Length: 443
Image (cartoon, rainbow, N blue to C red; front, side, top):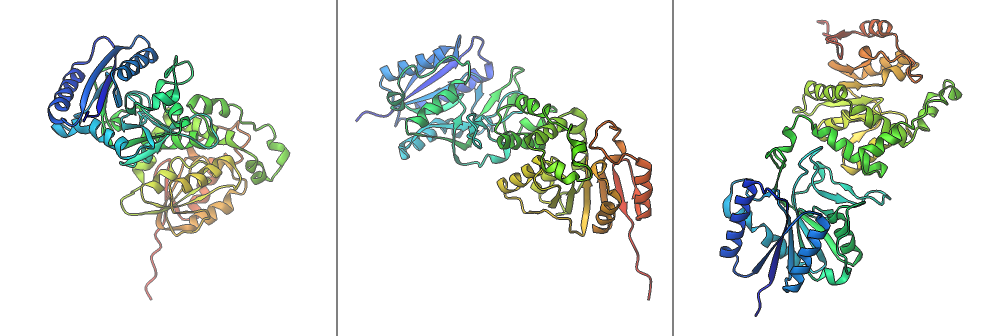
């Protein structure tokens, strides 16, 4: 009886990295010596044009009667945990998925981008969007996941799917990469695409640094809460890139502000996805990223605090605190684009949160919100009253000098500062106030 045959197809550049060469030699030795239940073929094609190389690999594999085609790039490392032989069982585990589940046409392993935001190279269809988007780091389940696209740098393909999709299997990458092309065709042919995210391989950067799930967050250019925020915003707005968000943000229109008079809630309720896009773009500015990190450092997430994000909008800071285990209430104008996104995000991540000011709170955040309040005194009364004795008010109002924004109604720093003092609040620094602890008088 003929053994199943796996064609290992490697798309390669000139100048193979030494770490990859050593790792792939160990891989081939392992497959030849320890996996006798399979036959193996090796097809290496230089990558002058990726789609031509992949087509050539498929053609050779089919001519040689391969049952499975394992597409690899030349910049991965399998033994990322220095666990030896078990790391090189990965292709057999992928083939087992295909053997056990005939409905699956393609199955991949987890790896991360080697630049930018270091997204996992796995994509999913989004809300009414023709473009799949990257999964967020939080959506990686460490098990088999049905997806729209799994990364072409490591995908095991059932060879028979190529009989269903017809030639050319891969086309020039003008609009879509070869992995998106293939996975789309496989799904159209009636098969499923999956990724086993319990199987992870490393990705070599151009400077020889190895990118894995453990190392990606160490890069100073990446702040994971911001990555999660951006991932969700792109999914919600059905856009594939930050560039599309920027295009939407510049369309945000405040020219009808005066038309609504004093009915500011009605005004904000008409602000749609452009409001969200504007906030996403704003919170990606370097000084805002630094501020986000500072707020997350100030709040102790280990003790299960109870907080509120008042005037939360898209809640880039507060929502992350909820994900980290804080009980949170989010308060803003129903119908506004950014607030509706926060509600959607809470459902997506199954976050247990409230939508009204209650308390008593360990802290209340007012980030980019106090300046939007006409009747700010009554709001401050309610907020301070909702704080526990010794609770904190985190506010960035006193560093805001944007007097030209028509939405900024309250800009009198001195008046607000004096009023907070009259309510028993103590200013610790430009961003943090605390509520006085009231001692009960002895009977």
